[in-house]
Every structure is written in C-alpha cells, then in structure tokens.
Image (cartoon, rainbow, N blue to C red; front, side):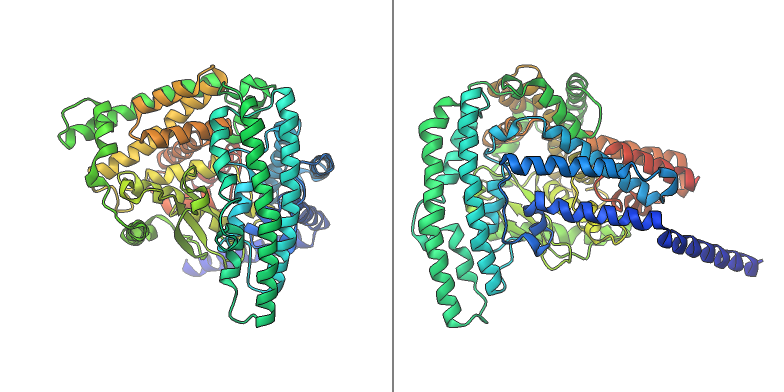
Length: 591
C-alpha cells in the first residue's frame, strides 16, 4: 500500500513538473511575463524614490519633476498602455499566479488613472506625506540612498539638482492653488514651515544634506575626499539652504495668509468626489463614508467595553475618561532618561516574543531589521513608521520611532506599536513579499494600505500569542491602539464627509482614547493632509480577522495557523477582494 502511495506521489510530481515546463515554454506565458516585467521596469521611472528604497540603482541620480505636465502625461499614457495590454491575455490561458498578477495590475492601472483625474498636485506639500520628506531622509546618508562609492556621491549631487527643480515647481503649483482654492488648512501650513526652516539655517557642516560627507568610506583617496567635501559644501550653501529658505519665506509670507480655516477636503474644489476616490484607493472596497462612519462608532463602543474591564482589573475607581488621563500622565509608565534606553526597550520586546514567532509563522524574513530614532528634522511632527529594506536584503528594514522628549516617552502602548510597525507587522509582510521569487518585480514593492496596514493592525491582536501583554497596561495599550484605529473611521469621515472641524475631531478623540493631546492633534492633522488613508487600518484588520475566523470554522482540526499566515503574506499587497477570493479557494482546497 505504501509503495502505491509513494508511486502516486512521484507520478503526481512528474505530472506537475511537466505542466510547469509546458507553461514556461508556452508563448502565452512568456509574453505575459515579458509584459509584466516591462510594467515593473517602466514603473520605477514614475516612482524613483521607491526604486532607491528597493535597492534598484538605475534612478539614484534622478528625480523627475513629478509635477510637470509632461511627467503626468507620460504617467497617464503608461497606465493606459498596460491596461489595454493585459486584456490581450484571457484568464483561461493563465496560471493562478498569472491571473492574480493580471487582476492586481488592472486594479493598479485603474486607480492610478483615476487619481490623475484630480488636481491634487496643486497642494503638493504637507507636514507628513509629501515627497520632500522622503527625499530629505535620503540626504542624511543613513537611509536607502547608497553612499559607498565616489559615483554614489556624484549621483546624489545630480539628484539634488533635479529635486530642487521639483521644489521650484511645487511653489509654482501652490501659487496656482492659492488662486483657485486648492490650499492647505492654516493649521497644517504652520507645521510645514519649521521643516523647511531647519534645512535653511545653521553651519553648513550641521546641515542634513552635508551628512554623507561625515560618513565617507575610509577607502576614498584624500583627493576624492577633499573634492567631494567641497562639492557638498557648495551644494548645501548655494543650493539647498537658499531653496529651503525661499520655500519657508513663501509659506510664511504668502501661503499661510491664503490658507483655509476649514478642515475637510470637501471644502476645496476637489470636493466629495476626491474623498470617494480616496476611500476606494485606501480601503480597496466599495464602502461609502456613511457606512464607514457607523462601523467606526460601533467598534468604538465595543472596545470601550473591553477597556472598562481592564480599568476594573487594575482597581481604578474613576470613569473611563479619567482612566485615559491617568494612563497618559502616569510617570511610572515613562521610565526613560536616555534615548538609547528606548531603543533597548524595543530590542527587549523582540527577544521576548522570538520563541513564539516560530509557532505562528513558517516563512520568516531573511532581510535584517533595525530600530532607530526618527531623524530630528522630522521628529516633532512625525509618527512612528517602518521603512522597507532593499530587494536584495543588503539594506535592513528600519522601525523609526520619534523621541522628541525622552522623559515623556510613555510605554503603555509600545509593545503593540512594535508588533505593528516592526515584527511581525510591516517587516514581515514587506520583506516576505520582496523575497518571494514567484512574484513579478512590481508586486514585490506594491503597497495597498488596506492590506498593508490591515495586516499590521491584525498582528497587534496576536500579542498574547507572542508572549506579550502580560502587564494589564500593555493590554490596555493594545486596546488603545485598536480604538485609535476605530476612532479614525469616525473622525476621518467626520472631517471629510460630515463637515467636522479640526477641533471637533480632536475633542472626539480626547474623549474616547488615551493618547496625549499633542499626539491627537498630530493625528487629526495627519488625516486632514491625506483624506482616507486612516480608514485603511481597521477595514483591512476586520477583513483578515473575518477570513481567519472563516477558515478556523470551516477547516476545524485541519486549520493550520502557520499555513494561514503564509497564505495571507505570500502574495504581497493585494486589494482586499482579491485576498478574500484567494483565501476562499485555499479553504475549499483544504476541505
């Protein structure tokens, strides 16, 4: 009997191998692979920063003017070309992986074309999301932009020249926006001004853009070192500092006065149509603002009930709002005096949960990982975030945490923050996708917020499984993080679809969560700058939880949590409906 089973398995393997060989040799598959490869390669021209972050060096000396009419016309033609190209490949002739790639590519082209129909480029700069902030991260020499060879340094000098053209164009676009009603709220403009001022002042040697000179490899010859030091000093003094001073002056003297007092995007000419597009873009669903708002209210009420239970457990006798204030201000939860202690704290979290990771995940990243303090130039207005490693794994994934005032760094919600931004959140999902040899290049670095942020929020609920949340305050931190995302459903739709003011949104958040007032203000202003992005977390998390519950119910004893996580992660970022279809096929195959 065993011989028959073994023979059957061998025959099945040979049959599968023959099918794969046939698929590879089939001209349909070869043509499809070539088309997808071209889509990947051409696409990096339109997002050169993503190319550098992925370790693709072709664009390290370039930064096209993303705001020019010529650039936007090229981008539109690019997506139209490939939207037409994919329809030449019938689903019936494609493999399962190819069908998924086709569906993802179709979504990607369609949503990008839809975005190009709006004049959002008339508001190209904000305090958190705009491309200048990502570019400035490269300037330090410690991020994705390589500074290993003399050519690397020369590439950066060329790239800065291109970037300064973009800055001039950004100012021109903002002037057009001032004349037509496309302007930021005043409350956001005042946060942007210091970011530009910080790069326009002080000694040249202390400027962020001079940083790579301090990191020059020892192998450089003295003549090379002197030549580069002079070139960078000239670049900083004659180009970078004057350009940033000019932008700061424009923002203070012209743009601020024209800034609007309203908070929502519906109060600009972009209107509700743009917000509806943003909902679709960030949730990858057809949900509307009203449904999302009601879902948020329901989730806030549910999580409040769980918070009440924690409050009673620790013996706090006041109401929940008083408990929020207590947790916010409890100095026992602010134990640090040095920033290095914060980094060590996160390293300790990683060590505690490492043994449990193997029980929940079969595939784990090879890409290295680091925890770093957020750079000072953006620290005051930035949230904690993850930056992906390079495709080849030579550059690590980095979890950045802002530490503007170390003695006020409250740890009650930091175990959950590590799960979300680092491991097994963004670092696992991003690195495993990049390391998956079965995925075409464009899918390795693709980002859909509902999947990406949804996964990260889902991992927060795994803290107890990973050996964390043993302290009730840390568990309360998890609930605080979850309610924070539920509140986002309420306030984002409130601001952009229901006429809420910035102050109303701040008041609602203060009444319903334990974040500090300063953090809540930054968060609300974040939602104002990028409508809809804040919706993606909770929508994505609820879908992944729904899929896990469905799989556990239908598969019973056959359910394997490690296999489920592999199924979720192996395809990289995809729209939620495509993910649900995939998991349903997996459940059916395993029943």
